[in-house]
Image 1 (tube, one colour):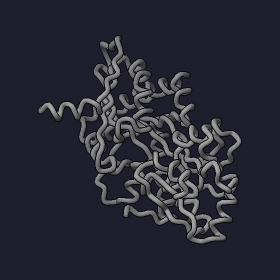
Image 2 (cartoon, helix red, strand yellow):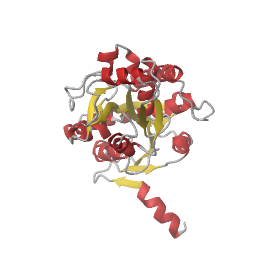
Image 3 (cartoon, helix red, strand yellow):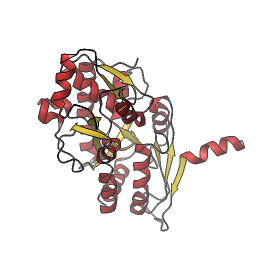
Image 4 (cartoon, one colour):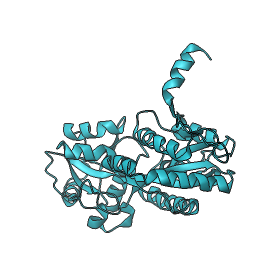
Length: 324
């Protein structure tokens, strides 16, 4: 390997060793978890926070490897082509389902090419405006948009992101004429609101909650099924609009190659569940606006993925979101 290649590879690889190793049974070697998101981003951070607890549970070294590119396709291809032995896993999410819906030509099908192990955590988006905005309630935004068609913008971190889909759903269900402004990334959403380039947005809770608590923005609603414990005074969008399509929670869970043996899937499920039930990890996740959501079984996670695929397909059809 050339020196330059080595220097590029190292930051995307993290080892989480555990001192005591199993001598028999599964797992007897280190476990690699492939993350299709860049190091330092939200999903990567949450996975690295969980890794020490997973290492402790499995009594093995947990390796996190970031494989970023082609909208996550590189990571999914790598994992599906790996040996189905339980030692190579992937941090999967509803994002992969949405990508397949928006781009049917993608070669990987999450429902057919992976064995679900367990969901891990989920999070909603938060409808927010700048702190000095005249809009105090969701109804104020709707009224202003209807009174002045085409005068308002909403921002997102890009096409097909959680913020884009939540905003497009809100606009479509209320029959509003509002312009979507895809920014370079979610970190630009708050700046865009404060600057006045956009009038409202739906960043994920992990991004929004600290900003709301810091007084930089005002939260009007959340897209979770229930109110967030971090923002108990903020209503859910479903409370206001009475439409279940407004209930939008992104989630991240663990997948394995499709032919991974059932007994290994069960062992992985038990270990992941134990790690997620650790009080310290749950607190870390919840303080960042995440909900810890371990599945009841690998089978129930698979059924959840099927229902989620149906729901997101309906939302994409409703909003008319395309890859372009």
